[in-house]
Image 1 (cartoon, rainbow, N blue to C red):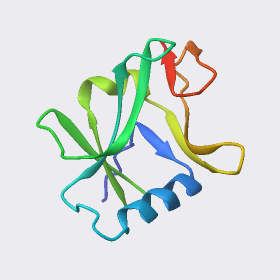
Image 2 (image 1 turned 180 degrees about the horizontal axis):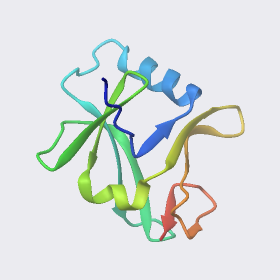
Image 3 (image 1 turned 90 degrees about the vertical axis):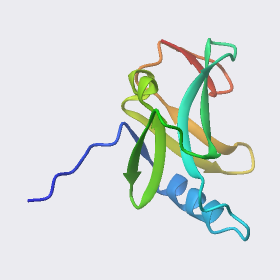
Image 4 (image 1 turned 180 degrees about the vertical axis):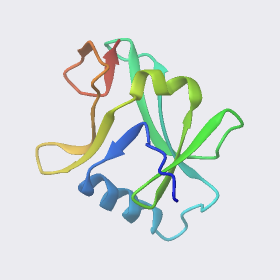
Length: 114
């Protein structure tokens, strides 16, 4: 019997496609993993982190739809249940975060409070 581990965050199809596109770019460093996390700052207190970097010792490793990603264990409290989307339109372009744990978000959608 196969055990499925639920990932703390999920990605929409458009986010998956954009991440795969970035990972397939010429010169992409395959030793780096996608990092999902938070850091202090931003207009609401905490800012989302999404980028490629080397895994750290205190990271948990997850996979969602064949995309491996890492997250610091302590960040799961703030991000559990969050969905990451990619907006490719003319008016708004970039990754967006839908976080059920956020009590307050800023207008730009990149920072939040819990």
